[in-house]
Structures are given as structure tokens and as C-alpha cells.
Length: 225
Image (cartoon, rainbow, N blue to C red; front, side, top):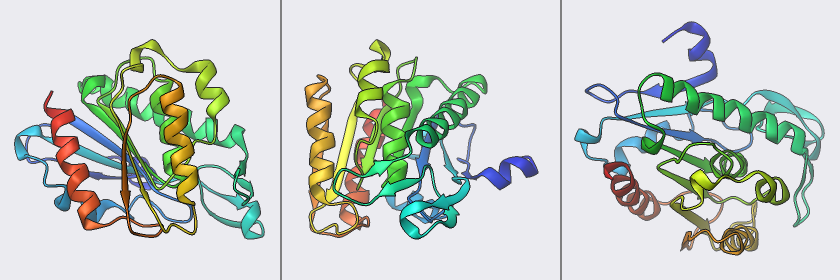
């Protein structure tokens, strides 16, 4: 791995040659190391040979945090229930992740063996990226998140991913991203004729071991197809 790559993402390689890839996007103020420890708890079969990539978001001022600079996929302008965000920076991050997917394809991993996961802010970027990607992906996982670019997705979503498997999970007592926002994203997906899976857990803005184990089983099925 090049020094430049090390500065932009964390990579967890399988024992053998990578045949599949999971790209996992962290939340506001975190970095690519945030979810790296979860990999063993997913209990993915070794023969799937899954590479995990955990990109770091760029450092930028975040308006709702008084302009403090931190890792963020996009600026959040207002923390109301509608989550007013800077869509331009979100779309820029989405393009970056799409480029990362294309890099994996160029390295020999088929698009339908690449799965996108996003937590919180990362989930909003994952929604935008996966639903508008030009080739069919293995799946999309949206954790404790919301859909910030519904109009853009509606305008640009692709037939390639019209049957994309989607796993949505949210904590019922999440005080950072209220569960209503997760439910609204789920409803948006249904209105667009996707068939997402809804998974609720009695937790806050976090992940639970039960959730990760269930996600691991779902991932195993998606990447084994």
C-alpha cells in the first residue's frame, strides 16, 4: 500500500487474494479506524476472501459545531429534523467513494462483489453512491443514518442497482440521528421501489453486537452469491 493510500484509508486484507470488498464509511468526527475492530465480529467465512476498506473523510469546518474542523463527509448547516446539509460537499464525497469502487473493479474485484456500508454521515454518502452507481453492486448497508440527497438520488439512480439488496438498521433511542430519520429513508427507498430490510435495535447512536452479527450473516449471503 502506498503512503498516500495509508493517509486516505485503512485496509484490512484477507488471507488469500481478495475476491470481494467491503467499503465502510465512518461518521462525523471519526476516521477510518473507527470500525476496523468490528471485522472479526462479522464472522465472514474466510473463503469469501473479503478486503475491507475504511476511508478517512477529509478534514473540514463543520457549521453546526461552530466551524470546528474535523473529519466530515460534508458540512452540516442545521441540526434540525430535516438535517440541512451542504449537498455539494456530500456529492463530492460520493464521487470519491465511487472512484474507490472503480479502483477495486480495476484491480479485478467485480462490482457485484463490492458492498458499501455507511454509519451516520457515512450512510448518507453510501445511499448517494450505491443507488447512482453505474454497475450492479453486492449490497448497501445504512447504519443509524438518513437520506440527505433524496432528490438527487431520484434523478440519478440507475437501473443497474434497481434491485440492490439494502440492509437498514437504526437505534430506537438514537438522540443524534433520530430513528424517524432512518424510517423516512426506509420509506423513501420503498417509494422508489427498492425492497430494503429494516432492522431496529434498542440502542442509541452506536452499533450493538447483535446488530453486527446479524449484519455479518447478511453480508455473507450477499457476497457468496
